[in-house]
Length: 260
Image 1: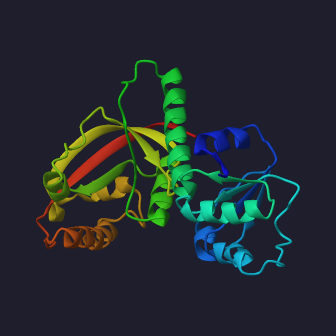
Image 2 (image 1 turned 120 degrees about the vertical axis):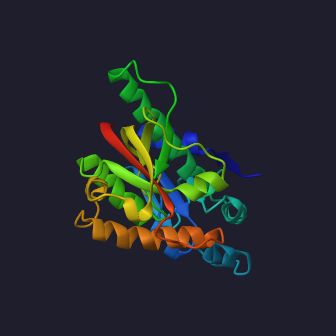
């Protein structure tokens, strides 16, 4: 049975700047989209099919893989990595599997960044409430990154959301005084903001002022309407509802309290 390492244990090793060899056996496109990086990590992308071929080609060797160093093997969830590690172990490679793979890694480092930024914030603001919400903007990594950056810059101090989804999911609306940790597209905490105003208004009654505070594009109401009509239309389509110009929108204004 091959050795395993948890995401937390790996994180601590990287934090301590230990020299590590990490072999990611996912396909090139997934690896390019995201992989574990650090100054002291020798990062190798070796698709699992290459390692699987060792079972049928007994004389085959893979020069990129060092035999004199421990290698941490990872994939999306840990299953393929375990299979690869068993094959490599039978060839006398020193291997360890990252439990839960990249999925577990992302979850851990995201939660760690959330807890760390909140701790830092509360050291400066000891009267802050104990509870908070952590979330990212939009529905894609790119959107989350772009809007989180606007928050950090102080450009974006408002956001809008679909009131109907709160109803359907039986979730409470944002409330004044709520502290929010803003995440980027990788799920990393970048800022703490506080909600200072919440209004529910029809889509066609959203104001130029609110559109400007959202900080996106040219900050005009026309830009806000175009972007959000498309965004809300897609959201509503997923729950078999149609967009209309009088749909209720939750308009939230917030202030930036802390940033990385």
